[in-house]
Image: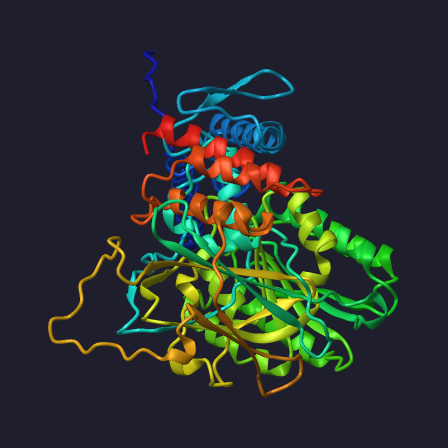
Length: 626
């Protein structure tokens, strides 16, 4: 019997049905995974496009984002039984990136300290000081692929543009009025450029700050009731034969130790990501630690920090609690955005809540000025600070860093806060500001100091003020006690220099008006070239006092004091740096010759250092074709 072959029916494998909730979950996980992945790739592109040190350190953020995306994708693959090989591959990539990020960030961090002071010119190669590994090549924008040199100039620094003071016709404008300026930020900033082998931007050069960086041995006032005396010298201008210079010098008295008031300080410290580095937050920490060593149990100090937000890092603490204060300073780290306005608000609130009428109440703000969160424009911040100086709380600025340095903003804030603007380019400069010259920094002896000079048209045809472009005042502001001006600290000296064109000189740059009226000579003042007035307020007083004296005698430049000749050399140096149209043919060599003749004792070495800067400027100008 023939067997018949029976065919078993094929049983189809049942396809699992995915419920609506599971389908929704899968879609959500997929969307999140790709969003994280795209964000990671976008961060990578940004890092590659603009790879300065701060941005490169954000590789941690990139790895976290990319790693999170990969981990989520791996989770999806496992949960929904996707390819096991894909899961293993994603795990491997994630772990590799996380491990490598630690090595990369550590390497860059060590390279920063090893190479910040050892960089050559364009095209030079840069090596790690410890390992000898090639890091990269310096490009024309002063950066290195993967690592930016923080001590080098970049086009992103912000300086206020001001036109050089013009020549004034004495018959039309016989009176010149300005506020004193004891800021020194411009000199140290210019110095850092020149020491690195580069000419500074012209707007970075404020000649009055170059002159007033140096101490001068002007005679002190005879009585304590008058905080300073006026010293005038009339001599010839070395850069234009036939013209004259009117040199005005004042110096404040030194407060004796037993008469010093206690300090009530708030350190306002920028701890944002841009402050990373030994030339930024690290430099401020070293400077403030020096200051702590000088505090006594009578002093009080607080610390406010700001990055993406602001916080009180140290509540008001007596100066003898040095271990506590040092620990708070050493604990600071740089990260996040820069909410400068929020930090200032917190600092002023803390200072006001703990105001001591028997102490010096001051905020010392350390920052690179790179505000990028909240209010960031100069006018808003200036108004904010100006409204709070009436509370008796002054604000001074300690600027650091390069590449995002906002000099314009720092100047505005310091002026509005009745404070002083410094630029710290080294530990040595931090020591000078916060240790050696601490009396000048923190102990004011006169507020709202204004200088007004009236020129005799019978003697002076034209005049111009050298520097002080950002400190000019209207004539009527001199007698108006509501108009703010600069302050002078204990032992501070201030110098101002005018260039004069004598009446009848062939050097005149202007002609008499055809229909102008002749000046009536006053026989009582026929021997006077000018008349100098100074107004000031004593601390805690509202009404100003007046000092005045005439300018009569003229002496040869060679017979003037070392202080006068040296300050004139510095003025000529500044005019050369700015490529002034009034400098004539006075070269760096001529500047150097005059400075060397006026070096004097120079116990602190500042004048010798300046002579070295003249050589640096001459070399930089030649190499860069200025």
